[in-house]
Length: 177
Image (cartoon, rainbow, N blue to C red; front, top):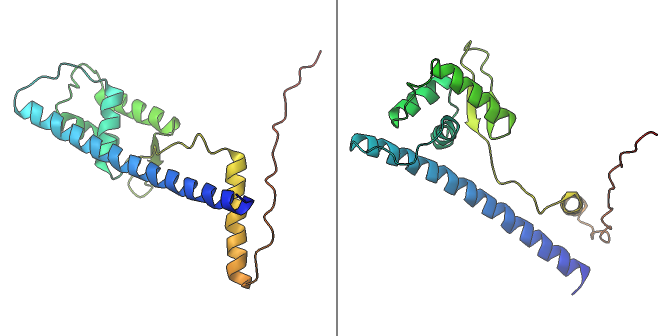
């Protein structure tokens, strides 16, 4: 196999990885929707869940299943709709605010400021597939390959020979004696 064959195989593998990540996001969204439906129907049937769910997981569930930006008040209403017991919290909205802020800080949610509606900031589910296997070398390769393809289209000249991927070393910490 030639280097070009390896590059094509790498590009194909990366495209498949990205497609699978999108499928995972779609499946996660659908799982959250079905979980909300199960919770609501269980409550309507008078059934009590045998495994209690915590407030953080419940917030994740309703925000993920919403598919649209939701305010903390929306989250509280959705929690009540699926039968989550908020009575043990002195200030349930404050607890929800705190959890949403923490989930935003961890990258699971995305904060959406709404300046025209004072106090109506919202959150949107943001956690997607985390690319672990694709390191900076592969990202640099994909950028270089993308730039080469764009240059080929713009000039309609043959592509230059592929450039080598440079390894970028991280600076090491040094301790002072």
